[in-house]
Length: 161
Image 1 (cartoon, rainbow, N blue to C red):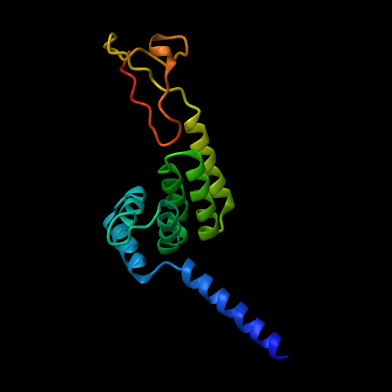
Image 2 (cartoon, rainbow, N blue to C red; image 1 turned 135 degrees about the horizontal axis):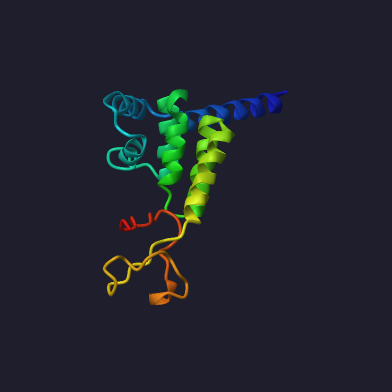
């Protein structure tokens, strides 16, 4: 009986500790809600949570912003957090954190799919010999068809034709 009681107490303590870790601290809730009231963009709010005084990682900043911003802002924070990832593993990690925070798998999957589609877009090859930027990405083109690293790198805007 004592073993069962102590095991039950241990389980309850573990659950309470997990809930305390997952719940956004009051300072984060206050900062997120104040920024939302001021009209700050969701990506900028996540970026603010990554800086002092919070200094959270992208995954935690996204998850806490989702929790603090409420259901009305969850999808926007999910998209912004995943879009801020520097590479696919980080995007998947942010997606996992967002899925736990929001519980909305469809929104997380859509944001991750958008990230993957963005990664597959051709990049513009810039050639200093051609003032127009060298045109679209071409593997046989000048410069050997080099590409910037995948993920987190936005292609430059092509000049108007």
